[in-house]
Length: 619
Image (cartoon, rainbow, N blue to C red; front, side):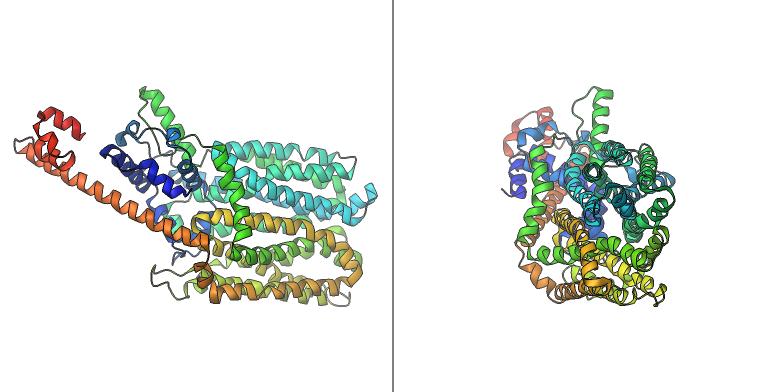
């Protein structure tokens, strides 16, 4: 059943009370999130804002409130409550200067929150690759092959994929803060078995479950950044803020082998885990300070407090509904897979993004082979070879104003006045070209050792820059194309690329040994070059492809229904305000005006009632 159709049946328009209740909910949404509604409408119409090309991605990274409302619509009307029990004068919303609104918190406090979640997210991602620096020590101590030891990376990435699907429904039920604290405590505790492990099997298994809990930071942290962004921030610098936040998760994999290499070289492989344990403990402690930023949870708590303080059960908010776990599972866990298997756009995008993501993680196995085994570098120094990839990622992130100009130079959509999602494909094309260029040149300059080491490291810069551009702006394209379903599309993409990132590194040792680093790298570079036509096709024919998508057509139809519903609510609100103004003017002149008011609201049958009764009927 279409949730939008169900919504119409639930609310109905059978009487003035239901109509008034629906209008009050519409009005509260405008008072609390009017800038956000305009952004959502822009997103649903498949357009990016002219001044902020990353606005669709910003909204997709914080889907919680839309998911909350969608799940509430799916449930029966009995769980939502009677419309008559929701008087509009008792609705709880954020006031203009409400200190409980996260967007009204002091700048220093919001900056502290961004630092806390960025640092903790970095720790989780850092742990995924710092393990690679310790692989030689694991091989030596437990007597296993390099391929078997690499399974620690595989299980960690699979844990992140599984956790990203499980954490989302939990955060909708309990808010962001409890999930952050609970998951990070479990993540930190599960590092201890790796520190004192007596077999490689312990490490491989425990890393999977640790990553499941650590996924809370990767999944929810960007949504927290959006939660605390002010209107001015969203309109002027949201793309830059999201880009700066992404420094931590995008550079976490690069800093892992750099720091982990020196730790392993001087302290041993166990200290690679002890270090992460210390960092995770600090990250968990920093997550204790931020307050809840998830608006539905804040408003529900405020409603409960007002009921208790005033001893009045009429206080309510639009999130004051018990969510169905089954509905949450359907929206958060099943839809990503349904879209991934039925949408041709996602078929090609998932293959492209997943391939370059898998090759990126394969590099964390390949670089030590090149620089440690063939060039004879120490583990710490060989970790510095990843600096080139990190510099490239930073260029992509800090160059956001330049990429924004490229996107906004695209012809505008005549219907919306904004650039379409295909404008983002311009940057995606640049990224798709830089990745194979960096990979191919690295492959043929990494060996022999007579070639200066700076040459292959330098070509890690275009490789890292291309990867970052493909991830950020490829995700933005999906967010702009799929509108309200963007979170599900991105979740499916995240699971697919995590699977590629988990499995491709397993082929690294044998492939580089059999083919040689030059030819193995060439094979990977040619695979990446074969993906270049994908963003080119979407740039040229993306609008036609989107027009044939059933889910996007449904989204457009639902958006039109929502706009019509909002217009009707506004007209009803205007008529009531006009009638109330007439009533007030008549009373000031010494007349009650009750009969005229009753004729406008309840019909002629109310004309014979006493004035007091008429007023009560109107109210």
